[in-house]
Image (cartoon, rainbow, N blue to C red; front, side, top):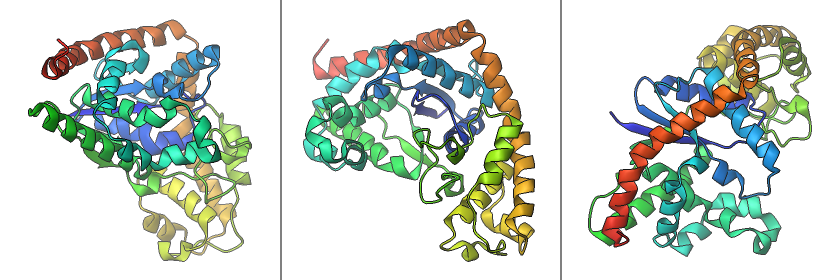
Length: 330
């Protein structure tokens, strides 16, 4: 069976964008692939973290994965720092990757901003750690959003360069699984920005732990425009907030935006929002309740992560030994 590797940052406070953009798709992939899902805590420390908050966030994100329906018996769920092979292989890849490749990575430029000279080496080199995450398990496929395709291309470049360097096909070149663009969830306050935990306004996002009343309030307050809903998606050009809400409805109901437009053509947002609230509450409330239930039992979450790390290590260990052997380190 083909193998998937995918990671999620332990930022805590999972929101609707995380769910529709990645986690729900992971649940659907678990019957088709051998899946390894990783809470990437080593990536998290590329920016300063409060230790206690990081520990809590690792557990909270794991609770979200479990609550959404990812089966820890069927899949491997663990946090990255428990498997030392990620760091070991990342160093080897640091000696394979080229500076020119890393200099082209747009996310580093965005995150470092105007203070590039003060950015950490970890932030600069984290794409090589990402490559190690994937190739340590010889993953054949990686689910990615549009904004992550560049990182997977770098992973393929590193894998190809390593294979050429040792004159052996050690690593497969993983293929992307591109998520539906309709699942790209934007802020409820600004349709041009992605939904994010870092947004100052809690009304910009629907958190996975929000109760029914909070979900309803946020959707009612979500920014729209005075026009009625169009009958086709072409009528959403320049109407980013409207497009976002219709996209959320479509993603939650597994329908295209055109199908949603056809159903609600000519209706005002007040009517549409009532239906969106009903759908969002029915889909998200059970998951939120499960997150709270899992979070009340941190011992169970720690056990899932520990057992997952042990299973991941059993896969990673012989692959890392193979790498060391062909490099001459063992």
